[in-house]
Image (cartoon, rainbow over the protein chains, first blue to last red):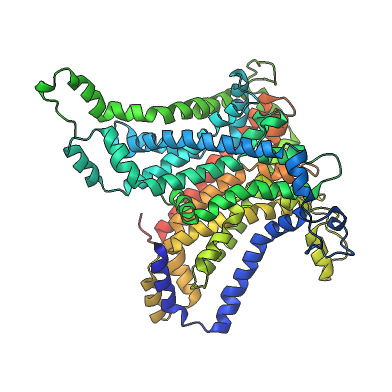
Length: 293
Length: 312
């Protein structure tokens, strides 16, 4: 969408710079940036397939490469630890929390943006402020509540608490999206005798699919990455999520199983990376959309 | 506009009134989100403030003790160290993230081959779960087998392994570096979106008037970009100030509490330590800093925009 205009714009003046100058001022710094930003992933991947005897033997084997790659670490992870269970838990919690948040957010955003009831502006502001409340000041009282509600150490505790940071974000994003849809379409539907419910489900939502995808994948990623609530509310190994499980169960005693740890980090990142690679544009638009308003 | 039910509709008008009445319907639609946010956000926020005034422990309800927690914190050198660390971490990381992120955004805004590919891979560090990338950094910062130490020794720049996380200064630098690594993509991609809204004609006009590259950056790009810079940096400061995951993975606050942030100290006192009241008090102590940081970075940058005639 914006690509077209940018390409046109940038070619406009780049002829002023000679090629050698552009190599020094543009390509070289960019390569350094890309190298630094991607190296940890390379290091993660190469460690995950390195046999243990090569892992710490820098004298005889270059640490940057691997001879005789092995799948032992990944096999260990998948068959001798609770890792598959953590993956399932993370997936389940992220999916449920995202679904609940999206439903709540669609209604809230529609109410604030289109119904414009008394005080809807203040509610909109309140939603934005809620987005600014960080989990690290909420986890202690929430832990107490979770305990009193009897859902401590259950996945339900995470499914119910994750919407606290997903709902404000998604609502804010969808409000921006709804605003971009012409009001006339709804007026036409109203004149034709459609109810508010029909307008929402038959006019507005079909037009908002890109916005819903943005909010959905972003919420899913945020849930997948969440750590402090999962660390505080979950005790038993079988209910842990991937970030918590990898950190608390795979790290034991003094001998770090670097191969297994890196394999765990890599596999745990894959679902969000795959999701991301399919929806890069939605991702970028949701990130910048949340900032722009 | 409210619809006027005709008399012929009779009994149905009451129900239709509910269905079409914007105010009632608005509140009804708001209900699910409101229930979640009031129950799990507003209420715990208040409960957290209350807990800060009690001596609640895990498994035991507390009683009101007034300002005792805060009085204890006031004379607690570890707490003040964590405040210092948090400020250092936030300011250091935010400045670096801003400078490097803006630079990367400017690079990506150039005419490049494979532009969208570059943009896609640059965002990767931000997509991957922080805890998992922090574990990779933990391995990169290993005292014995650090790849960084190895590379620097091979290049002949140092003789012995760097003790990245065992030395107080090194540890502080290392955690800031890891935070900057993760934060650059967010700043860069957001600012790139802002850069793309700046009309190229402004640059062309300035070039014709003989403006240098620096002058164009200083008097066109920066003023046009400052509203989005204000918002991006407010978010960045907010997330850095309340960071927990990275520190918890890399150092758990060590060595000698040199990297303990307020969030990690609050967790340590409250959950493993069991002192929920004291932990809550530390968390509450973050709120004034947080508000100050938001106000400073938001209004500070807003005013610069206004001074430079960027409109409201």
